[in-house]
Amino acid sequence: MNIKQIYMDANALLEGHFKLSSGNHSQFYLQSAKVLEDPKTAKLLADALALQIKESGLEVDTVCAPALGGLIAGFALAQALDVRSIFAERVNGEMSIRRGFEIKKGEKVLMCEDIITTGGSAMEAATVVKSLGGEIVGVAALANRGFCKRENSSVETKANCKLPQDIPFFALDDFTFEIYAAEVCPLCKDGSKAIKPGSRGN
Ligand code: ZN
Image (cartoon, rainbow, N blue to C red):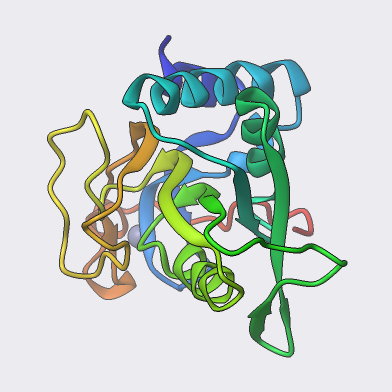
C-alpha cells in the first residue's frame, strides 16, 4: 500500500508553497482529516495500522485519542482492533477524560492520533489516562512527521520528540519534510508566494 499516494489522491498531502498556522513556510501540507473523509479509506488505513500492531504482539484493551485531531483515527483503529474507543478532550486548556468514560486499573491503553508531530497532545492525554489507573502500552498514528522514531522505520528520534522511548510507536509512514522560518524560506527566495492551506475558512 502506498500511503503517500493515498494521501495525495485525497488531497490530504499538498505540494506547493504553504504558510502553516505556526507562521513557518513549507513545501508540503498534511491534512489527515481529508484522507479520513472517505470512510472506506479510513477503514483501509486503520486496518493496515491495526495489522502492524497485531503483528507486534502488543496487547491492547482500549484506544484513547486526544480530540479533535485523533477522534476519527482512534475510532477507526479501535474498530479494526476490536477494542473499546474513548477520547480525551481539552477543557479550559487542560486535557481531561469526560463523558462517563471509565478506565480500569491496569487497563492497557493505546494512544492514537491522526498525525504525530512531537507527540505533545498524545502524551498530555496519556498523563490523564495514567492518573486514572490506565497503563499506556503504545502510541499509534496514521502519519509520522518524522520527529519520533516509529516501529519498522529508520527515521531517528529528534530532540523535540515527546513520546517515551520505552513503548512502541506505530505509524503507516514517515512524512518528513522541512519547515522554514519565513525569512529564510528558499521557496520565497525563488520568488513564489506562500499560501495558507484551507484558506476558504478552516
Ligand atoms: Zn516561503
